[in-house]
Length: 426
Ligand SMILES: *Cc1c(COP(=O)(O)O)cnc(C)c1O
Image 1 (spheres, helix red, strand yellow):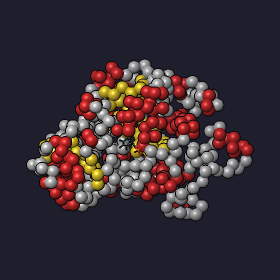
Image 2 (cartoon, helix red, strand yellow; image 1 turned 135 degrees about the vertical axis):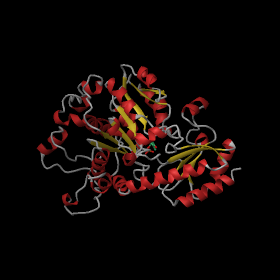
Image 3 (cartoon, protein in one colour; image 1 turned 45 degrees about the vertical axis):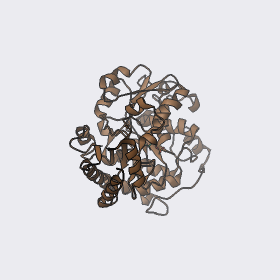
Image 4 (cartoon, helix red, strand yellow; image 1 turned 90 degrees about the vertical axis):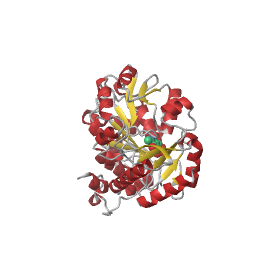
């Protein structure tokens, strides 16, 4: 099946449901009855797959997991309660105390804080560098580095990641490239095709689309050699799981060693599982992902073109504009779109930026992106207000920057709202 059909059909066959339900059923249950003691022992010993307890897995959540794996072209997926827990689990599933990752200075706010303030308390550090400097990247990787982590399009800098170059460097060092693909979704970028090994999603954003849930997922491409000697957690017997050596003892299942470990170690014992109702809501929203991303990206291009011609606008950044510094990368990585986010600098700096935001009528002023509605925010005073001046500059946030997440409304209404708010910003 092609992508848009998979959105509706992958991972669920109504003929396998006892009630032949066309819409995926919601399994609101905590536990599952064992058929007998042998069945129970096989499930616990990973000899047989099946449901035990809904923290570890749930049939409704499994439909979403299988659909996500199909959409990304991966081998397995694991759903989590939020994009934030997905980022966290993607790291702690390979790093232990003393290990590090190399990542960008431009990161989603919550991820930035996790990497700067939370993980270091557990002995895991993140080296934040300019990931477009490939020599610096190469020299930043040491024997304790377990992954390169990046976002497909940074926020709000809108730098498009050069995944092929990043993955080449990662693989030459025997480590994976982990990609937060929230801003692209598989509808406009298949990160695995460009060398990514692990894809992380906040399903809260474009994937579900309605701005009605918090949800996340981690998808594994399959085939990375976790037993290559670089990963203590995959070489040494796991005392929390019967002495299992995740990189060596899985046989045919070694393809999905990372996902199996994530489910049976971090998810089982830390518990950021997704609720079945959430999985169902995400499945509902995702049915229209292809259509929505098409409209989002068309509207974003039209908005960027409109703003470029407005006299009250100082500058516009949108990777889909021919004159944009990231245009070449967007052509290669974003299927000819520029993504769905537009940032611009308003004439009159911080004060004009605030006036502009306060005068928007249809655009919603929220700390979110990827809703079907158009959204606007002034990062320097909100999402990125915790950063000092140097960190702000490194994160690509100037005081006059306004960030727009362009929705799927009629483009005439989008332009009209921007026009009237710009006129009142003077
Ligand atoms: C929103 C977001 C997250 C965090 O996801 P939540 O679902 O809000 O926890 C992580 N990365 C990116 C790029 C995001 O936009």
